[in-house]
Length: 92
Image (cartoon, rainbow, N blue to C red; front, side, top):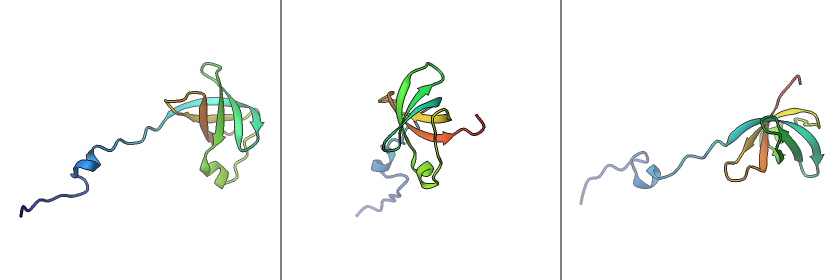
């Protein structure tokens, strides 16, 4: 029987796991509030409109997002028409 040191760091299946992509962070302005914590948001960089939902921490801490608020969005590289609101920028 072989004496093989296999730790979680050196195991073959752990090495092949990709880290989760953090997404594309952009700034936007909320245009309209929709039912179900959805929002129409206009991106500041290129004036595209996306549908975004609130991140879990914003819902958990009951952060209000209203039309006209500047927000930070996280877009998936796979679908650039949908995003997640991860921060409400204060003082704008």
